[in-house]
Image (cartoon, rainbow over all chains, first blue to last red; front, top):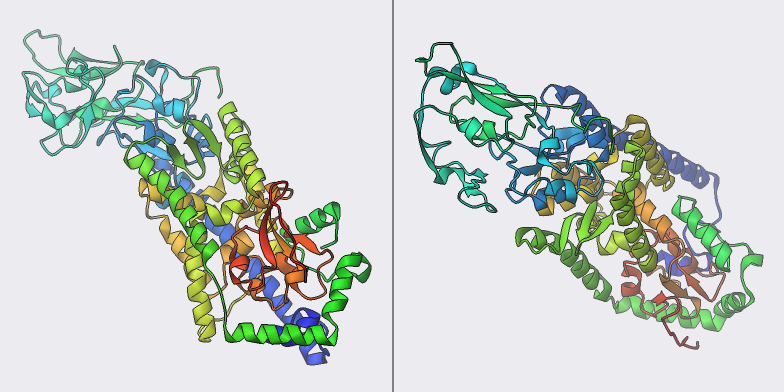
Length: 270
Length: 334
């Protein structure tokens, strides 16, 4: 109702007989407002910078990024955090980071052990969907991808190295991951849990690798009677993580070592 | 606001960047407007107006027409993102930071700006997305994004209702901030992106956080949104949208010159200030004070989010939506 009374002056502060105490109160309030504003601005800036701090501290354990991701630093800058890669992936291999990822809040990653990228989409729908080139548009074949390199992380756990076979499902009946079995369906990935194996010597990592010649089983000793074999990863490995997903051992014997640099196609920049 | 296109636009930009509104000098007021001000100050007219205002306070008539339309708009637009993902409709893919609408690239202007400054490289698809979104918001009014699309706006509006209730009960007090803060933050985040090479603002942007949560369920980042809302309820009314959000400032700049705006008609105005009380950005409504309008009809400046709250509370129809070149309005004679 004060406005009704003061409407000639359009507000409360103008035109009133300004006594000295009133004036100084107004100056005081203005000063407080300025200080408040600077404090809030500082806090919000710090909150954003906290993401950077988290990034620096969490650098030891890097996330596996979708195919075609630029080198990590460039990738974080170029990703607009829209999740279109998540949406187009037919096997739902891609997830988005949350606040605990700091700068990676909203940035896509893959957990290969749970659901690896098996190039079910015939290579790189995610790259085509990416609006910013954070997933490099220069890649159009799965063989050009470089997400990481498979490494025998726990050699003692590897069944083939022990000369053992594998019976039953690869990862147990409750495993939710899917894989494209071209001999079953060229276009639709099937549940890994729905397929049983009867292998005299476990070769699941080699058998299902989507990149030809990226991994092979080689004898452990020159003795031809020795059944034991060891997985050997070649330079053509793209780090898709199918071997990691399909490895029946617990703990997993073969894992992807995530690359944070040298992911981009050589000599080109997108 | 000075009269005429140039003066009005410059003053609107000043307000957008945080300059406090100022009473216009006498010589800036047009003849017609001055005549109306003089008429309104005649004793008879003043008496009549005061009586009308008192009657109006006795029997307040507020509608929720625009609020309901706006909430539907926010819910539907954000709902399409969710529905499209979960039912594989592929109408709208992505989030509010960037998306593909029926195959066409859309990119949020502030997110793109951060990205270009950090990455220092642009691809064609992003340029297409930026251009599309720029043109859309240039046509529909810039900050229209804020009140008709942004999911944080809706939450913040609910928080504001709670805040106002608590203020009325004298449990809390509003702590206004300096509006220049938003401009400072815009440059802080731009410089940070350029220097650090990361899109730092995206980590804490409630627009992106909420949009991604709705579609992908990344819920932990909601903690930050919750903190902002609590601050807005208990400490500073609409703090994020009013004083901080660089997204709002970006869209404000886009809508500096735009066909869709709210127009104030001084002839119908009682100057009781209801519109300024409900407004997210009350400084844009300075011309609703008696003697402040320099023109008979004044388009509201670019900081206005076109939310229509002022239209909902205005009992005399002094404020209306206007689309330049399309709206045909017969001015009511007074």
